[in-house]
Length: 488
Ligand code: PLP
Image (cartoon, rainbow, N blue to C red):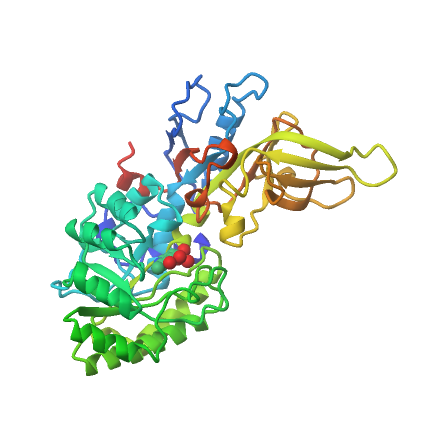
């Protein structure tokens, strides 16, 4: 992914990064670790801690952090919880994603808190990152420093963002069916922008906060997405006229249109159709006397190689229907796109059940392994987000294998088959039905899972008494991000 943008990045005008370094392909220098302990562990000096590594690529840096931690844990002697699941988060990856966003959506510009309707310069496509997919405080801190706005779904999310010192004008309460008391509360704290998609919500807003800046969220074709949202939210085009008429009658202020093509979208045409529909609603709104100023293109972007195509189609649609000279401000609400690839999860094998140790002639070696995280924990993404996290071997047989051929699944001769299970008593708590490795895995060994930053820990539970708070070891593979984070 970075190779696509490295050569062009230098030609972009990023005034707010004038003094930062943008390294996307080159080795990274002076990269740092920072550890955030959710537990008050009695550290025996064996965690990532803080330290300095030089001349490391992002992978090497993540590997170093993983190694430092797991090589210092002896499951036979450690205190309860010391072998717990933990994350390594590379905030440099978030930074690269931000640059990639700006490059591929040319109207995406760095943005520092100018969403209020009185600001004239609105020719920007602003990512309003969706807090819901991962409210990690350091991730939010970096995004805030990068100038994104924030899409919040509840009072708590709003308050978390406000506590970081973010101006309320950078927040959109993008939940079309809001809790009444939350509307009263967040608007008292200065949040004005919110979405609606039905008459009941409009009447609620008219009572709770008639000064709101409202976005009419329209229905989309989300049939190609991983997580469909339009079953629950979005006004159909045959209802928008009535909604706009009601808003006018209630004296409300509709300022824009929003949509979401579904999380984990895979068909770029969904963006084209949604932009066309939004354009139609803009015109409809004008007949009711509303001059809409903002289009919110929502989330749905993935961090994999589909992003460039998705962004290309969206850009084309925006240029056709909302050209620069239209004066319409464009914002987006990417969540998964920013968070997913930045987080790697390491899990400890806490138990093993031998189905076949390979000594008999009845088949290949075959084991069930149980790790200390599962569907009720950080793998909630399997249930809620339709993900298929891919296990890799971090440490087995006293060797750390991160990012080596021995780490990845292998189904050649002599391979050993595993099913991977979570720690709870529930039979659905299975992470992987079948995977084969070269290595024999045993109790105390470690697995890792990449791309675990979105819709994972935010929906983890404490079922069966397992913790849903796990350490995050922060690393940063981009000096530009480090300076924004003020890591020295
Ligand atoms: N905006 C809204 C209103 C959402 O409901 C969601 C996810 O559910 C998002 C943004 C983030 O979507 P994604 O993670 O697909 O970018």
